[in-house]
Length: 216
Image 1: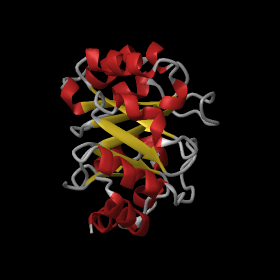
Image 2: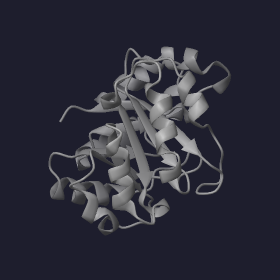
Image 3: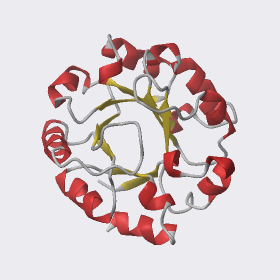
Image 4: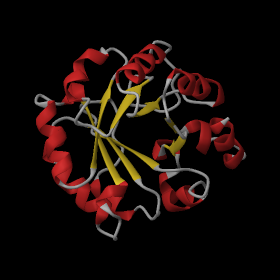
């Protein structure tokens, strides 16, 4: 599988967000947008109105770290597609831990024509999402506890990636948290094909070189 790089705007300067995105969009494959509500995770970031203002031709990878995500799916789909972006270029990820009826939420996402993905936190076993693996387009393995950027990579995420790749050889496997050139390489070796990196990219003096290092 080709390795895809998804810069996380969590580490970008929100005061000049579209400039930050423009500085990397020629070198990456999709844009990772972290949505946090201060309830599911101890931080608040952005909502659908900010997604609506994002100016990029990159596919949008919307990571909803929020409680009751089913109540907001339609708002985010509308925000992501309002300016002509195809629903096929939008992915919405919900957390297993935030969904009482995970299969129903996945089906709701797919009903809008966008890609559906599910994420699990470091303390959640892979078994908790096994029953929806045939229904999702991607699984996001969290390699830090969600909520803040710049955290240290949690090693046992690699075991989850390896097991998931054995179970679903063709599935997109994304990993997010503590990703740099070293940890990214280990994730790819374990079976991941989409790397989310925030501070490693946006904190680099040369962002292009940082992105290239992730592909090696």
